[in-house]
Structures are given as structure tokens and as C-alpha cells.
Image 1 (cartoon, one colour):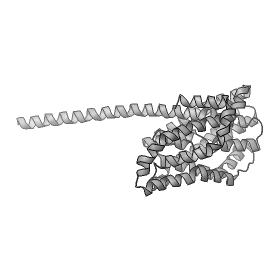
Image 2: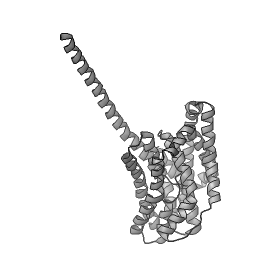
Image 3: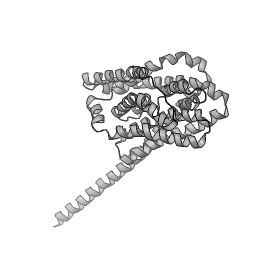
Image 4: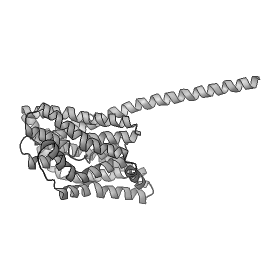
Length: 329
């Protein structure tokens, strides 16, 4: 994925007239991706995410409070264009991306935690986005809660309920067999989603305007920081490995389509540029972050296995020595 995702982004930017024609399929692809990922969750696991909400609260605090505030401070220090600053704040005030669910599945993260984070952040968005923009930018906006809830129901809620129901009603067959069968197909669909979403950036990228380049560099660095922040906080909390991946992806990925609607409606002009820049980098950074994290964790697991193997050998050696002394006596 770290190599394929950039190719998909480049294809979408360079050939928008080709891939733009299939962009209407993206919501349906998201729905199928959510269904496949939900096959790996059970009602008990989802209930646990809410009964023990430490990791869920952590994701919400990072995405609703910490990242928007940091974005406002750093953007204010970097840019003098108010529209660009607004766009950056919008970019990091919008809900967790639905596609994070797919990345969590690819790297075997906690599907239940990821699903809960997407659902809760989207439900809260009509309230958190206006408050955030009012506090950080001093502007009043209204979010179309009905449209957002419709998208949530179609792309997340209904497919998730269907996936969990299939898994429960088939006594785990959905997770053990159907999910694995659909997984390669859904990963191919993710490439289509990445390519289609990149078409919206074509006109901005190809102009090579200085403000576009500056916004691109800022979003690249700050988006990278988002993934790193998720990893660091998850490490500090000492969460299980699946939760580590879920927190990382949920912290780093944003629902760009929601942000583009708000930016276009309330902040015409340059505000849309940093919002759409997320399309260029999010999926590439998700692939790099996931692969890097898997490599790091793999090395740690190898060290742990070697230490455990050595400890067992030492225990057997001591036991044999003790047995030999006892036999000598």
C-alpha cells in the first residue's frame, strides 16, 4: 500500500476526466467496506468499547480538541491568509474518516473501537464543528445535520449493523470465512476510493500556485504529526496492539468530503485548498504509518519472543541442575 496509494493519487490528479465519472460509486464502496470490516466485530466487543471507553475517549479528545487547537496555532504562525487558516482548522475539526475502518481491517486493528470512533465522532460533528470554528476562528457556521446523519446511516451504521448481525447469526462464520473472502475485493475498492477522491484536487495541484504548494507542505507535515501523535498517545496508554492501530488511524484520518462542503459553503476561495490537500496525503500516510508501525511492533514481538525463549531455556537449565543435585544427594 505505501507504493500503490501514491500511484492511485497520481492517477486521480492526472486523469480526473477518466476517474471522475465513477466518483458517484464512492458512498456505495464505503458501505461495502464497512460491511466487510464489521464482520470482524461482535456485539460483545462493541459493547466493551463503550463499557470501557478509555481508548474511545482518547480518540475523541485528540480529534475534537487537541488537533483543531494545534492546527489553529500552527496555521496562524505560518499563514497570513485567513481563508487558508480557516481551511486548515476545518480540515482537523471534521469527523474521523470512514475509510479508517478499512485501514484498521488491513492491519488487524480493533474493528469495534474503530467503528465506535467513526460513529460517535460523526454523530457529534453537527455540534462540535460549529463550536470549534466559533472558538478558534470567531465565525458562526451551521452544519447540515440531516445530510450528515443520512451519510452516516448509509455508509456506516446500516452496513455495520448488517455485518455484526451476519457474524452473530452465523456463529462466527461471517468473521472466519466471509470476511476473508471479501477482504481482497474490498482492498481493491479502497484503491478506487483513493483514486476517485484525488480527482477533486486536480485543478489545484496542476496550477502549482504558491499558496497551493505552501498549503500542501503544511498539510503533509501536520497530517504526519497526526499519525505520530496517535502512536505516541497509544504507547503512553500501553494499549493492546489492535487498539494501537485503531487509535493511530482514527487520529490521522479525516472525512474530507464533510470538510469540503463546509469550506465551500462558508469560506469560498482559498479555504478549500488545505481541506482538499488532505486527499493527496491521507491515504499515503496511512499506508506508511501502518507499515512502519507493523515493522516496529514486529521487531518488538521478536525481541519479546527471544527473551521469553531465553527465560524458558534458563528455567529448564536451572531445573535440570536442581534435579541433578537432588539425584547426587
